[in-house]
Structures are given as structure tokens and as C-alpha cells.
Image (cartoon, rainbow, N blue to C red):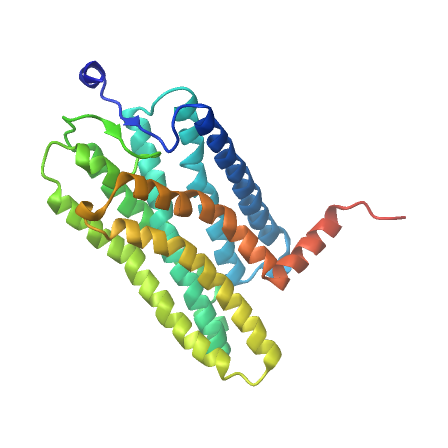
Length: 310
């Protein structure tokens, strides 16, 4: 290991599974999840694009969530499989992976907040919905999520790659996560860790608090609805989104807002599986199985491509 450290500037990922037959079987399971996530999210994006009835702000935001989840899981699982089977990531490759992972993480946090605002306006201020959630404003929300996430990710990635790494370059993770790289630096990173805490608060904690406040108002309005059918539809839509938010935010916030002294690499890797692998797989399933409009769109689109009887 010492010889490797002296002759290479590349990082080495210790990975999620042991390099044996058991690890290979678990990797195949993760690859199966990856395939399901890709099919589900690409299918959801295509469905929203093909069905005109889903061309509304709510589903435009959902299509972006599916696209982000697709890129999210694609930034970790394929590279994890390649590293397990063949080799280790290069210094530049680690930086590219870190950039895309952080971009998707930050952008998705902001997008989920936009989706909560969409439901808040639709249920609490339905008469103002066409104005407050016009296609122009929806587009600005989407563009803002992508732009802010990319800028924040670029800043963190460039800073992390410019740190001097004079210790072992073995990252105890299955992808190039910036907090997992910091213990390898040979300089004091306390100031930067504080900036990571601030960034996490801005892109994850504040949107989460905004989502909580929005759905507090929404649930209050839902319980005071006179129509049982309207109450049931609103509650189903909101509970679906809250399920997705919980799956995404809970492990992320718990991981990134804890001080380094309370973190363990093994626990961080297990939690990372939830928000990098399982959540992108569950999201399209949750939104399709609990949404009558999506199920109806599936039937209509399938009818478009199925052969018609003469």
C-alpha cells in the first residue's frame, strides 16, 4: 500500500462489498436495482412527455425528478461495479463523479421543495394556481434547481480536488463523496467542514423545513374540505410526496449534518445506499402505484402502441 501511495495520485475506493463471491452476489443485486430504477425513471419521463393530459406543472416537476434520479443512480452504481470488477477511479474520474453526485443531490432537494410549493398553491389557493404556477414560473423553478445545484457542486468539487492529500488515498466509501475524502487531507479542514454544514443546511435542511411548513398548511386545508372525494385525492397526492421526501431527506440530513466525530464509515455507506440507490428505484413506483392519473396515462400510452383490431 505504501508503494502504491508514492507512485499514484489516484484515489482508491474501498467499496461497499468484500471482494469475494458473496460481494459479487450483492453487487448483482444492486445492479438489478439499478436496472429497475433506470426503467422506472426513464419510463416515467417518457410517459409524461407522451401524454398531453400530464402536461401540467406538477408532472413537469415530476419528470425532472425522474430525470435527476436517473442521473443520480447512474453516477454511482456503474462506477461502483467497474471498480469492483476491474480497477479504481482516476483522480479526474473521482472529481467528475463527485460533481454529478453533488449536483443531483442539491438540485433534487430544491426540486422537492418546488413540488411541495406546487401542491400548497393547488390545494390552499386553487384560484391563484394558474398565475402562481404558470409554465413560465415552473420553468424558472426547474432551471433554478439545476443551476444552483450545479454551481454549489462545482465549488465543492474544485475545492476538494485542490486539497493536498499526503496520507493514504483509500476512500472508505463506494463513491467519491467529499466528506469521505476530507479525512485523507494533510491540512486542517475544519473551516471547509463548516462550509459543508452551511451548504447542507441551505440545500437540504431549509428546503425540508419549507416542505414541512407547506404540508402543514396543506393537511390543515385537506381536513377542512367538504368534498370527501376531493379530500381523498388531495391526501393521496400529498402522502405520496411526503413518502418520497422522507426517504430522501432523512438519511441525507442525518449523514451530512452530524460532526465527523459522531460518524462512522460503515454507517455512512449504509445510509448512502438509501439515498443513492433505493430512493431512485422507489420514486417511480410510489408515484405510479398511488396516482390514478399516472395509471390512466399508462393505459392510454400503451393503447397508442398496441396493435389495433381491424
